[in-house]
Image (cartoon, rainbow, N blue to C red; front, side):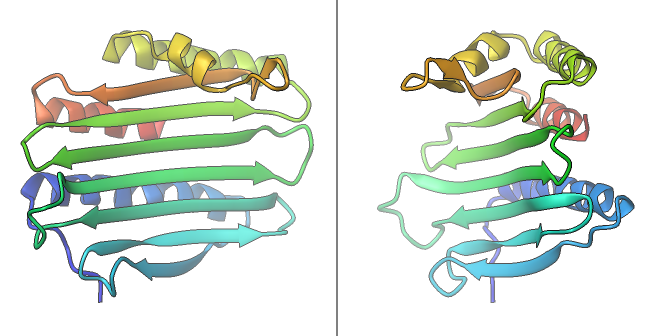
Amino acid sequence: MRHPPASILALRVIALVQELQNHFANILEEHGAKPEPREWLRDEGRHGGGIRLGLRDTSAFDRASINFSCVHYDDDPSKKLESATALSAIVHPAHPRAPSIHTHISHTQMRSGQGGWRMMADLNPSIVNEAHAKRFKEVLKAAEAKLGGDAIARGNRYFTIPALGRKRGVAHFYLEGFNSGDFDKDLASARDFGMQ
């Protein structure tokens, strides 16, 4: 049995990432693919766990994985981490002209009270479609304008593959440690980012 965290903030983030997980799963189902759930537990569930929705080799998708997780250490004051809650979505279409998409949204809460969000996304096509790339970049620019910072430039650095002398994909976003001081506003911003 997966035990929930004690933190009210972590519970609210869980509700958000589970909503986003269902949102992504519904999109896959609209394209004729039903992901299969697989639960995993951290320390037999005492420290949380998660649910992975996965599929492979369908007519629309080569593979896809939409992962929710929440790990917490309420019973172990020696840990600096209080909770880490995340959604990671990785979708690889079957058609080579359809781009792969990766999205990650997570919230980390430290025992000290510090905490923040990480939001990442990239569009990674086998064969570049300029219209797809342009639309994805527009969405990322709008997210950056709303959230502030330089997440696109950071994404371009983060997704660089030095050994190959190139970037992975054509559009990138990486926001680390985001915390405006208003948890409700940040939670809504993370939801907006995920729903794009």
